[in-house]
Length: 286
Image (cartoon, rainbow, N blue to C red; front, side):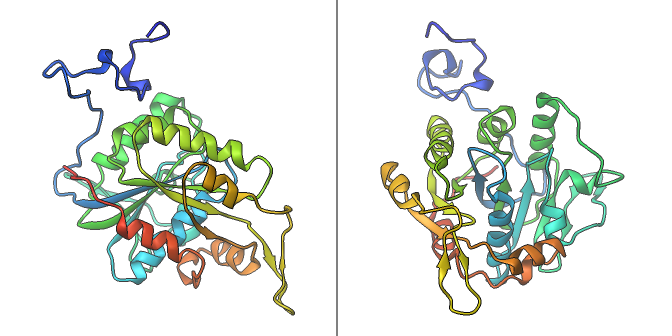
């Protein structure tokens, strides 16, 4: 490739340059191994092509739903510069550690959580770090945290297609991703970026969730489409993907998240997303 930088860690192409020295067929892998004593059966990334569309909300709802079903669930908050998972789950204690590694904080509903805000002296302190440092922290959250017998881990990804999302795709053995978007004219471009990156990294896309899809009148029950007509069905069909859910604009959802009680939300919108996660084949984690 004429435009190759010869830096395989920033590329998803399986060209000859990226072949393993031990084999002329097997591409070099950058997957990080789990730490000693950790076990994770299935890992799902929650992604978007831009920020502010509700990745953390979808992450929180799915993790809570699987915990309610009796699964041991975890959230790895990879959105290092904008972590909202601890606030959403009402976890304000500091993460602790042992000689074996960091110990995640457990929510009221039994979800294990690791986020940068659980390590900062003051959760409101800004994280002013460069990309390589942030990417290194994400790797540490995977291989230096004691993830004890986790059935489902959800990774709250940073938005976009930069250094940190690339690190997650290459370093953590994702079994699939769910794309989150909103009902605006930019939806095709937003979804396209996320689809393109997942395809380049050979990560299965389970489907799309539309957040802020509508508001429902509390009196008559009529759905009001505040952002105009949704295009999510045609966009999903264009990429051969399924729509896994439509989340409304609901003050009750916002209120629950603000008071750290996302686990109390009666999630009736993501049933198809739950099925997609359950049916996603799990790769071997080491």
